[in-house]
Image 1: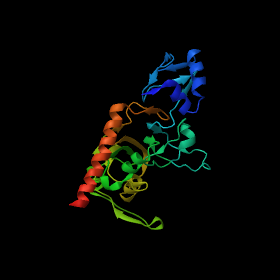
Image 2 (image 1 turned 180 degrees about the horizontal axis):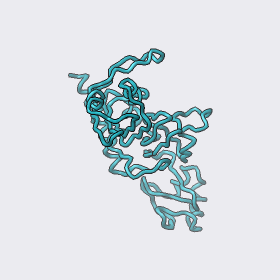
Image 3 (image 1 turned 135 degrees about the vertical axis):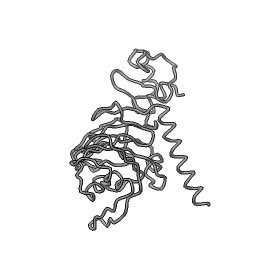
Image 4 (image 1 turned 120 degrees about the horizontal axis):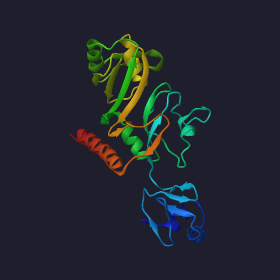
Length: 248
C-alpha cells in the first residue's frame, strides 16, 4: 500500500504538499469515493483528480484490447492507424503478439517486458484461438488437412515450413475455430490459401486463458486479478518446462 499523497507525487501530478491540498479540497477520489487526508491506496484502485484518472508510473498494466480490422500492430509513428495511437492509453504499453491489419480480435497489451517475452517464446506452445470465415463451405477433408499441418511457402520471405498440428473444429457452413501454438506471419491465411480457401474474416478470440467474449471492436479493459495470476502462472509453467527440457 502507498500513501495517497506519495502516489500522486510519484505519478507526476504534483508535490506531496500540493497533493494534500487537493485531497483536503475534495478534488481527489479513490474508486469513486472522496479521498481523505492520510489514506492509503492499493494496486488496482482507481485514483482520480477531478475527472482525470491518475496512473502510477511504476504500475504493471495488462490490458485486453479488441483490435478492429484496419488497425496496424506497429509502433512506427508514420503509420497513421497504428495500435499505439489508436489506443492512446495514459501509460505506455505495447502488444504481446501481433494481429495483421486485416484481422481483428484480442490483443494483450502491457508495459511488462518480461510478460511479453514469456508470451512470445514459441517453444512454450502457448495457445491462441481464432474464429475464421472462408469463401468455400468447410469440409471434413479441409479440417483434417488443416489439423495435420500444412506446408506454407513464401520464397521472398524465406518461409518454407509445415505448420504444427493443431485443433480445428467446424462451427458453421463457412466458419471454423482453430487453436494454434505457433505464430508464423499470416499463418492461418497462408494455410487456407495453400488448400484453395480464402479467409474473408479472422477474429482472435482467446490468448491462453484470456477470452475476447463480450468485448466489442475498440473496447479496452484491464485484466482481472484472477486473469493476471493465471496468465503469469502459465508463463512461469512454460518457462519451467522449457528449463526442465534443456536439463533432461
